[in-house]
Length: 168
Ligand code: SF4
Image (cartoon, rainbow, N blue to C red; front, side, top):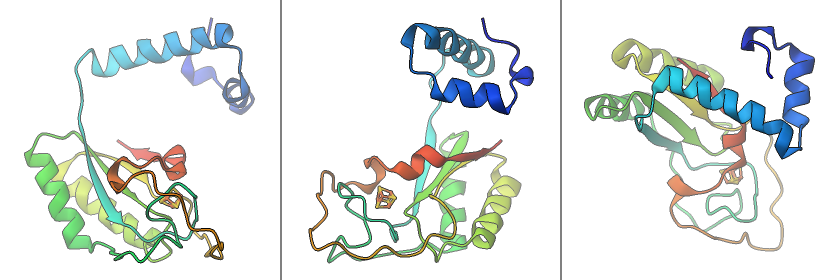
């Protein structure tokens, strides 16, 4: 039986994150499902995903936009372009806007902060960030070419997604 979420301290959260026994984890999954049911019910909620940059300093071997993948046209969306996408997402009924991209030193914290504030002010949508870790330095290119498993950046498996941060 899990304690109330508010009672989970750092040590308890860390212990749950390290738990590997599926029988023990059943309690956590059941609790997560309960929270999901309370907050969003059994409806399907769609997220509007905006790939704001395909620059990345990392070199994950399977990724089509890794630092040394190429030749590849690179882009980095402007504040106004991202905001226009967010407005379109709002008009289409998305309750959450996901800002996603590679680990791009050109997409600074100040830039993201400004974009998030503008989207919140204009649309009221929840925002999820999937932009990797700030302050990364460029990786050197390996002599082996990256393995491409997908040409669609929007469906690639990206470790940056494991480090998402949400603002509701
Ligand atoms: S998977 Fe993510 S972090 Fe890795 S190279 Fe691709 S965009 Fe960058």
